[in-house]
Each structure stands twice: as C-alpha cells, then as structure tokens.
Length: 114
Image (cartoon, rainbow, N blue to C red; front, side):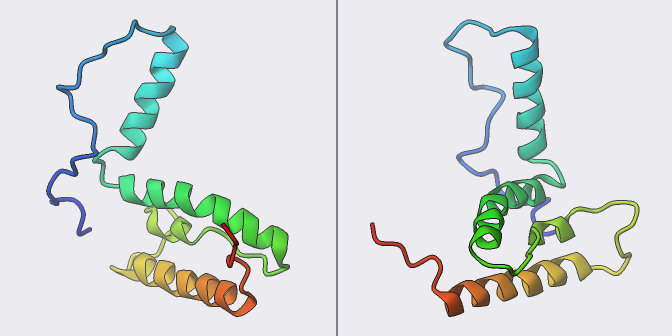
C-alpha cells in the first residue's frame, strides 16, 4: 500500500504530546487508546478513516433515494475472504465511488443552500 511509508502528517498524534488535563476513567482511557490505534499510522488506518467518512454520506444517500448503496471503503480492508489480486480492492473502491458520485450529481441531492 502506498501510504505505508509516507511522511508523517502534521495532524497525526505524536507520543510527545503531553496531557494537560487529568486522566479519565479506565474505560475512557481504553476507548481513547483504541480509537487512536485504530486510525493512526497503521497499515489499515486510511481504510478505517475513509469508512468513517463515507458512512454518513451513504446513509444520507440511501435515505433520499432507493439506490441501496453500501460503503465503498469496505473494499479497502484486507481480510480472510477478500480477493488475492493486488490492487483489486482499490479498483473496486474507485469504481463504487464513481458510481455513488455520479448518482449524486445526476439527482443533485447535495446541492444545498448555505
């Protein structure tokens, strides 16, 4: 994957960042540590972040239309039942992303007045 050896993002969390507030409860600390480990510089981090970003959009599209889309970032995770060909998941992600975006452009569902 191309993001394994990328330069650190200035928005990434660093171990040098000290806490200024008191510690939370054990459950809060475990949840926070899990979320940081889940989305910060792991081999699957970008797939997880993309999944979290796409999910509200997919839910909104499915509420407004009867398209029945699912999250395209599901193709980026590697697992037991994913295909073995290299780049297949990325191609699937790009294909379904284009399909979702073209549908939203055709129906003009995201033209919102601000």
